[in-house]
Amino acid sequence: MASFKYKALDSSGSIVAGELTAGDRGEALRQLDRKRLQPVSLNMDSGGAEPKKKGAAAKPAAPGKPVVADEEIPDGPVKLKRADVVLFTEELSDMLSAGLQLEPALRAMENRQELGGLKAVSTKIRQLVRDGNSFSSSLKRVSPSFGPLYCSLAAAGEASGALDTILDRQAHYLKTLQELQGKVILAMIYPAFLIMAGIGVGIVFVTKLIPQLVGLLESTPGSKIPLGAQIMMGASNFFGKWWLVIALALGAGAILFKAWKDNEDNRPTWDRMKLKLPLFGAVIERRFYVQFLETMANLVGNGLPLLRALELTRDATQNLFIRSHLTEMVDWVGDGRSLSASMMRSGVFSPLLIDMVTVGEQTGKIDIALRKAGVRFDKELNNALQRIMALIMPAVLLVMALLIGSMAYLMITAIFQTIQSIGGK
Image (tube, rainbow, N blue to C red; front, side, top):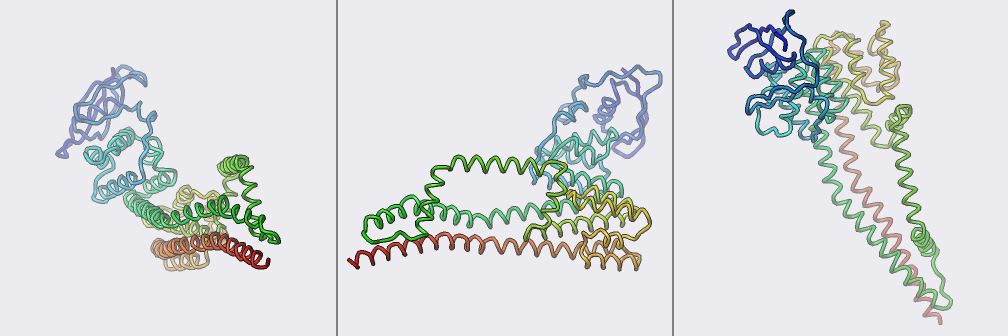
């Protein structure tokens, strides 16, 4: 056991000092936690014994107090639903904006009864933060559900002192993404029924109606089977004979493609290809613009040097192709070039965005210019998403009309040919 001297704040805000005995620093902090004391300093007495080795069991907490031992934190990452991540971000952002420090805010979330699984996450993060870890690194250790982007933005917020603002913007982004996914699911319900109905009608045509009609035509002297019906019958026979091989080939192709795009050496190429996808490439590009502008505006607006803000924004960018260009921008800005000139030279920003940043540099209010540009491109992002949503239904209807219409045309043509053959006898 070791002896620790501490100074801490009690519930009334007064500083109290004292001494306690514990197996290690983590246990000493837990003892202060159970006494409702906020540690200001905690130092081991030089005459104290060596603390017990890591892995020893911690003393149980007081009844009703959810305390998780430090050694358990890295071993049990907690997976959260997207809704839980949104709730955690909103709650923490609101409390930080109200003036609470990070650890008391996490304690308040930990003591809430309706947060469910977030209680364990709040407890683990608070203990890691209390032991001297950064909030962003604690997020990585506690739950994989926060993701690299979330953790990078949290690190940027810590560096700039604007963690509450960063979390508020992240909560807005996560809610927007959640709403978009909900809209996509709702919008795809009707097309999904149409697709399933079309597939069912196609199967009936190919397996029942067309074979019967072909048999009728073959039994009628002088009649000819339409070319379209011959093609469909040939395709039906081919898929009926080789469907297992085709399914295995498609599955193997999907696995190989996933392995290729997940390879670190190929990720920049895949990220570049995503930017060139029809419709979706524009959405990905505008989403990057919004994230870049909002993050830079928050960091620069809170007093962070431009070069450091650009480095943190680069680290928060998940597209490796764009990140490589941001790395070049960091070098150029470090060499004394302006942000707008570096953006123009990188070739990944639109001329309109560069012009807005140039105006901000000339007026000396670059953070305001970045924020206004972010608002503008956020509107463009929403418009691009709405266009995609509006195109889903007509595209599905067009495909189904072509599929069912082609089959119906072949059937009607074959029927008329049969009637003509019978009438010509």
